[in-house]
Image 1 (tube, rainbow, N blue to C red):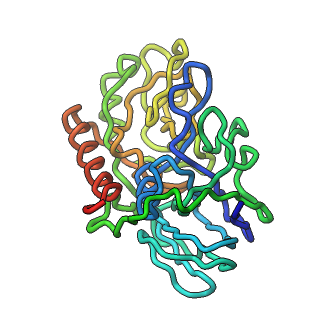
Image 2: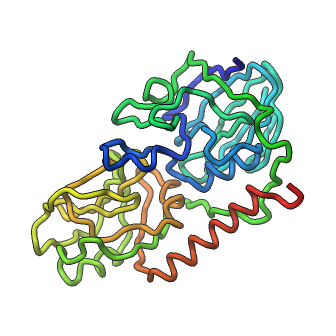
Length: 316
């Protein structure tokens, strides 16, 4: 089987597909990409199905060598890209020859890029997914980030669609430059907080702390006051939930979140803005703005329509 050789690994590069949905009731975490939009876009550009496994590149990228000729695409965070020293494009499909090396250089915007390869990354599936969940050491390559010397198996490139997608006419996701505003819906445990807590949440940006990771962003900013205590009977933890422990400093739950949690949740990021949050890293700033359910639904529909245009190009 053709493979991908890891020359240097980058800061945290993991294998991700759309994740292990439907198993949270059994204690199995979802994992998957921090920025689902860019993961889907990269796969569409090379003709893969949306669930094909990509490499999620975080902050500092790898150098990789290809066994055979492949069509590849990188979407998400903007990096300087080279193939054998020659500049390569972002958010567009291009061919990497057998024996060539793809290198990620300086990063300019965003925190995470997604490398899709025609045929996908063919590591074994665990509970129906190839996604890496770091906390439980499940999926991907031994449940960890890739390291120098690894060889990643690649799927059959002939199984990807013959018609590749063109670069989208307008950005599907506007990359943040150190700050982003994420829209939220109140709850599900808003009654556990003082009447002014939602206003406090929106009053000033929060800094993403250095101990943040794929499980969640620990935020430093306006404290949120509890009125019914900081503990609840553990319940489900949706993607984008803002848990608030006794410190009053919220935690934004992300892709590797636990399946249940015992802190009340003051609000939940809307689905359309999760990818935007996923393009932030430690030291970046995040602001929150409460919106209405119709606004949240309209934003998600617009995002899905933009992605579907790329996944099903005209004439396919």
